[in-house]
Length: 231
Image (cartoon, rainbow, N blue to C red):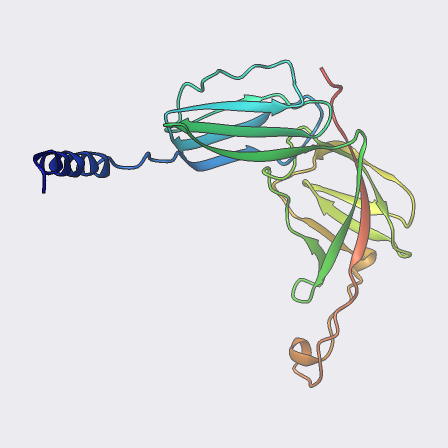
């Protein structure tokens, strides 16, 4: 083996060792990214929160709302702010970067129409002998969505308990609340028949008899809600 080959071999070995000892770049990681509520009125702010392990990050809002988030974001270890929504469905995208590597997450907020009309289905509870619907979370619907009226879509009258109010609902006639309440209230929706009448589940475990449990069908109530005027 020549002297040149003897010199070149150790040098090549040292180069390989040097490059092999460098750790690969650490990719950025988004640990948390939330946007709440997921249904909101036009232009009303939502709460955006993030937590990431990265060198830098930026928030992009689509379509533009007239607000410009800090670029880069001042803190990735744990931060958040309230940002306005657009007049149409609005997407918030968190982009983070480190050593040329990137990561991204997006959350969309649905902008509800104004007025906001939806039909709720209340299932019958065999124990309480009422039709119930669990309360909506503030993570689902914005706190500014206000219930204005109900319409009983069944053929028999109902009594609805919601938001601390008891409202008689004749079939098919829109009924306004005495005082508007939040759609995402802290109480469940509960309906019953007027005059102390109450159906019950039959058969099976509900009465101790045999056969499958027969549960009265659910009831449907249309809810009309409104948003504040866009700013």
